[in-house]
Length: 541
Image 1: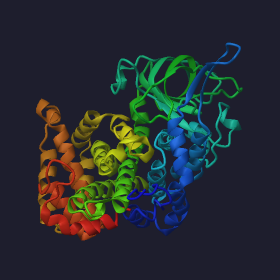
Image 2 (image 1 turned 180 degrees about the vertical axis):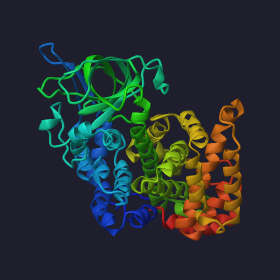
Image 3 (image 1 turned 90 degrees about the vertical axis):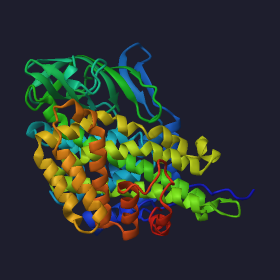
Image 4 (image 1 turned 60 degrees about the vertical axis):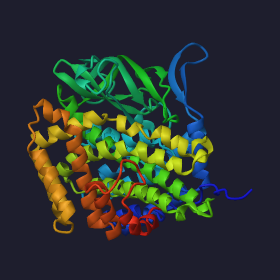
């Protein structure tokens, strides 16, 4: 048998991804690069790739009762899930950065690690992400932070429902959405009644209601929204109480999802469930918003990983497969497609790592707006990128063994999770109108490369002027919100590429994305951009 690409294993996902490795060195330093190197090699290994396949192929199983009819509400995972979680937690991809000093680069190091390891399998990234994000909210409460943060930041994966005081590490989840509300969490009906002196630290309440989407229900604790007398409030709800008994946390069923098969997404009923109040009554959204922002950043990073893996698989195939007398990678039209896809992946990479650096440096205004922009745009771009990459393999891409089918099923998720496109677009509009410092911080970032590209300068001026001119209360502003967000996101990606990527890469992105020298599909770069393909593909892994 001839003309078949070898198996896609054995690469070094950090060294082979030039844009990612440059971003780590730039924003986290050589020590971070050195620490991440083993994870990059492991992620590309046959061992890791096989564990990723097995975890996806063997879905979790819900056990509501034991053999004697006792309620247990446990989820059984394949051993490969636990292997993947062990590596992720052991690499410090959970809440560790929240215990590091500001400006240390810890969030950048962790963000790059999350990109690397998400390329192995995306489903287990959900509890990893939520554990990281929970740290951002818990650090604001001394009592609950001291109780939970060390365990959530631990590099020890300790699975099982037991009190956190007896565990070497813990993972966290969240419970926000309900059947009747979805993204409109203020429509939540779960009730919280103050019950002082409960079996938990802090101000204790008992919660009664349901949660429609609760991923990773075997987590040790959940940040949950419920209606207290003072309004919607945030609570920390553990699976196990300190006396070893189990909190009321009934798993009704697991979702049958399009993708993300390894991750157990459940429906949960709460019936007198104990929780500790986090933040003030009536301030639940404000309290949990830090966690939401952190998980939205991970949506950007996870989508970046999906795009990067799809592009790398397409390139791998094109470099080994011949058609019509030449390798696919040397065919002019295929080079157009591959370079176009690689531009998208590099722009997402640089944006995601820059946003992580904003978190490191306490640039809250830039992070606030930039994460919402990235969550909308990068996650939206993932599905078409993966679809085009799959097509590069032809029929081989459509079968499960080549990995791209799993990526394709995974691709839409991050655009839905933590707020769909409309939710994020309207969030940007609110930030621009109610938090003008966020737009000023974005404008400052865009102006870092002022004068380097006349096309970029003109695009930035137009996009920022459009954002500033909006009446956020008008129907027309809401109707056109996606257009505004898209332009701001593209302006930010372009400015970062002009600042940090080689000239041919940045110029091709500006020309194709900002000046219209591009058609309606990937692979329609203008013919005069053909000379940039060598530089673009050399960096694409």
